Image 1 (cartoon, helix red, strand yellow):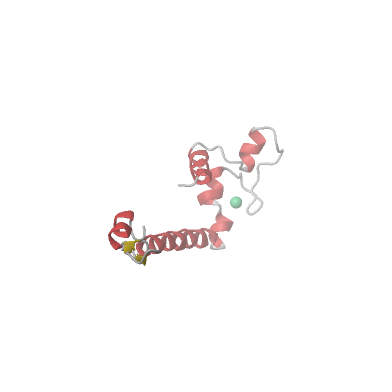
Image 2 (cartoon, rainbow, N blue to C red; image 1 turned 90 degrees about the vertical axis):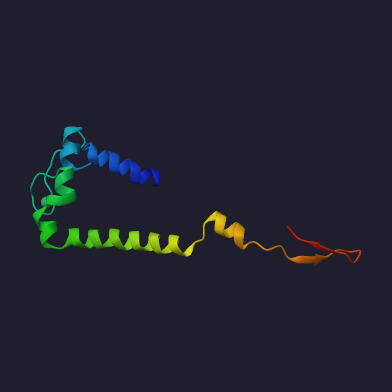
Length: 106
Ligand SMILES: [Zn+2]
């Protein structure tokens, strides 16, 4: 997993993302309200409980984008062969040396 994704995951679990509520708590902002619904914007609110975001289909859109990304990764992984399969498919080509003898390339 990419380091930024791990960082986001950990900070979301421990409520350390810069939600407006946290920015107020950290003294970086004065207003903890959500710009969409005017409720208190916590990490939980942003990720799963803003009623305006829910009514606009934003969570469904995000859910579908995650599934599309997973499908893309799985599809790419299925198309790739493993290092063992790549080694089994390796076939050295015959080459002719300067003195006319046959050899094999590496
Ligand atoms: Zn909201």
